[in-house]
Amino acid sequence: MQIAPGVFASSIHTVDWEPDAEVGGDVHVLCTGVGVDAGISRITEPPASPLSYQAKGRETLLILEGGAKIEIEGGPTLNLKVGDMASIPAGAKTTWHFTTPFKELWVIA
Image 1: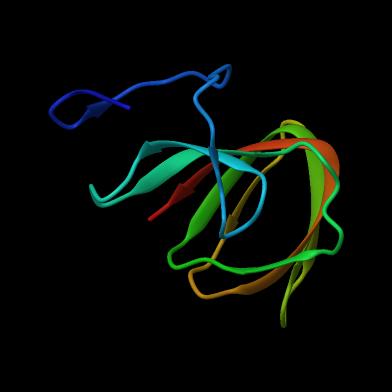
Image 2 (image 1 turned 90 degrees about the horizontal axis):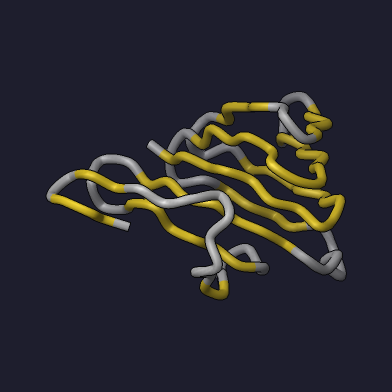
């Protein structure tokens, strides 16, 4: 959330969540439309099927809770757990398998 022009602050312990129609679960957006998008996503219940996702920009993420196996089309498979970070190129087609409850901090630039 913006606290002053160009300054954004929040907490990983936020209670301010919105439904995320694009990927399922919930999202808390820190900032968007300022040359970078950043926020936290969470998934509390296991999805019925893996999530197919293609980031619009380079996505860098940090796993805060749970884990994810991310299959990158034409590339490696990442097996991420709490504390792991990854950066995926813009346009990469990915398939995500979640260990729930799942929470990640993400930055798309």
